[in-house]
Length: 440
Image 1 (cartoon, rainbow, N blue to C red):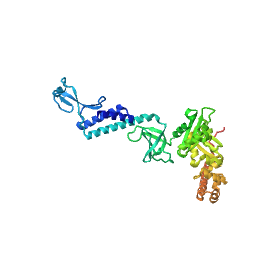
Image 2: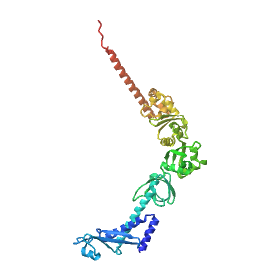
Image 3: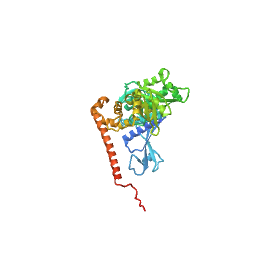
Image 4: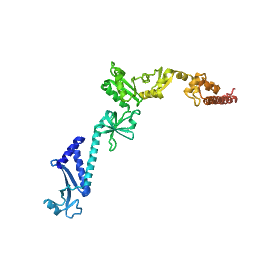
């Protein structure tokens, strides 16, 4: 039995990768807990594992006293002298206990303590192994599913791929191989400690580092990343070597490198653009494949007004605004895209007066302006039915716009009249604002 216990300790230590001393300590603590549960919680015990014999030794310590009040902690001098002829009052006497009679309940208690200790030690090992690996990519196998989260087997431990970190268009089956970006390593007693992500922008960066040697070597740098996982992404790259094309390095021969990343991301489209320190030139690249006519830079507000040809407007904005949204996220600047026609309209003061009307938008103003209603005055004079037909607008909307234009003009005229009447009253009372001068 003694050699069997020693063999089990060695086997568990080897298979679980746990420190042997930790297991021995857990075993000693478990036996102490079991003895106290069987013979009394107040016992003063010393439990140790004898490496030579492979046995657990338990000693109960009691203090030598004249009058015993607590048999669990005290022993009479007479009894002590029988055990040790040199015993004196106040000495602590240790008596080895026979633990062979520990019952089933005590054995279960010992087993539970050992299991808890092992799990705790395993958690500490996992944390120590992965805490410095945040930001790395790992490979695993889909183990099971829990409330939409994917549990991934990494070999030594399990990781969790939360629903929020999964690419929306992806599906997983048990046994699938999956790559993940280590987002967080946490000390947890219940949930998996390693948290993975496939939606984080840095996951895209790490995939390119694997596929593009120039990035791993530091010759090509990724200067910015913006993703809408599963749909589209933009990365900006630059090169520290004049003879290395950063975009070409990332694309690879016949697109092999970027296609490997796209395949891993299940078809996510990736735009690779050259980075530029000049915001105006940078946004030209960021809005590709759309072409830009001109860029107005407001560095203080970190805002860009980008003018594009009319036929490039929808391309620059992208489906549901995705292209310009990703470009703005990539640069960290606000980007306002306008067509050349819209920009030309905004330079006309009369067009700007149309925008003062309630319910008026730039799109509606463009329609009205293009059909000949080019000012607030002309709008106030327009026939709502004719305007609705010519500008292809709703009849009730045009009636509201015409009414709003008339109200603005009437308000302006009233303010002008009020200002004129005050001036005329001041002039009619004969006062000039100067004191009269007497003549000799």
